[in-house]
Image 1 (spheres, rainbow, N blue to C red):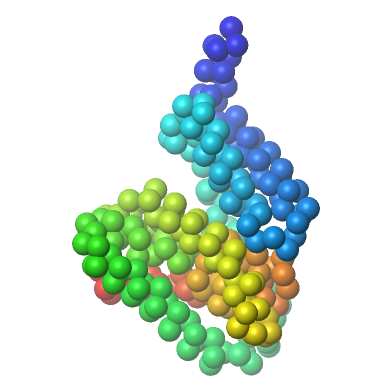
Image 2 (tube, one colour):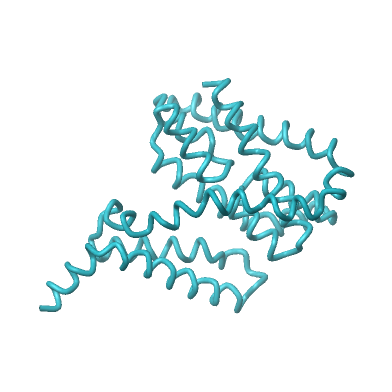
Length: 232
């Protein structure tokens, strides 16, 4: 009877939506216990737990995604909502416009160019190259770019998340080691390199860092889509 109940629940879309939200809430509480520990990133904790759950329960990803896809849909509105702090701090943005545009162009070219160089060194297939190239932009945009170029959107999503987690982990110690104290510069750098996950981390450190990280993430989504299509 218990096995039959599990089969029924595993096939229910509501189960995976609820489970994902519960895991996220638990992960955020764990992260708050040690707020200065970058390893305890709530996204990293949530991903690890959900992967373990699916593996142990022998649940395929399509079954999970059928329930959790509403969260995926919210990526779009969440990205657009980053325009609100941009409007509120417009004067600060205008004062830093030229350095931001230079950093944006250099950072976007470096992110895409370094990925394409590594792909050529290891002789990756064209569909893999298309999947990896937009890794430094937000998931919703990266998956759209990948699909448009006949890449694997699922692989793109995984690499985007990994890139964001790595950026969120190393940004604070790296910036401290480089003695960069300007939170606008710190935030813009992490948003450019590690999109939404890095932006969430930046907001937890300082509101100004979060603002500029969100700006960098939004602008990088536009520039990266142009660069990737130009190169590929």
